[in-house]
Image 1 (cartoon, rainbow, N blue to C red):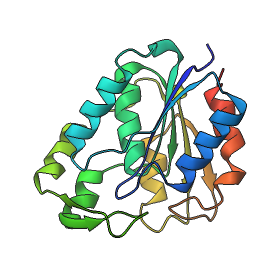
Image 2: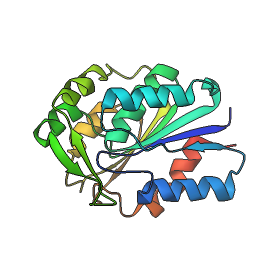
Image 3: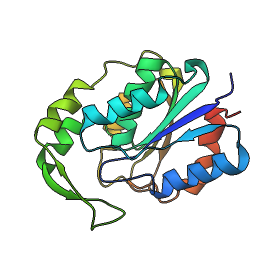
Length: 194
């Protein structure tokens, strides 16, 4: 069934203003105007972030929705997909954010506006642990774009986590997927938007 509702979840310190989110939003607006697009600004608290998402998608048709997420947003997108059974696109997804973000508690600056500050509380690490999912229930529902050149996350760990899913493994690249334009067609082909 074609996707009629698409959720995009940004990464840690990121926002709906991220380059990938903007490119996805533009593509939906220009080529799939009937599709309901939502890319919320996620709160720093993982529990609050997922509560916001759950409320936002509560009325969405589970058989024609999809989620995409980058980095920490990819971890969140996995949680959403496991709960709903929807299709998911993951862009350099975080696999163990509780471990990776534990050293980053305290005040942080927003990536797209360094004047915006937020606090990543130590308790948020436990909230991330509480969102961890086990093995994928339906690996065929996932498409992961993973860059071996990711300077933040280990590509082997990402590829291992999404074993059985469709994986596009890039020989170089970076964490931001600066060459996202080269992959966006495959992302949308996998999503099968209406």
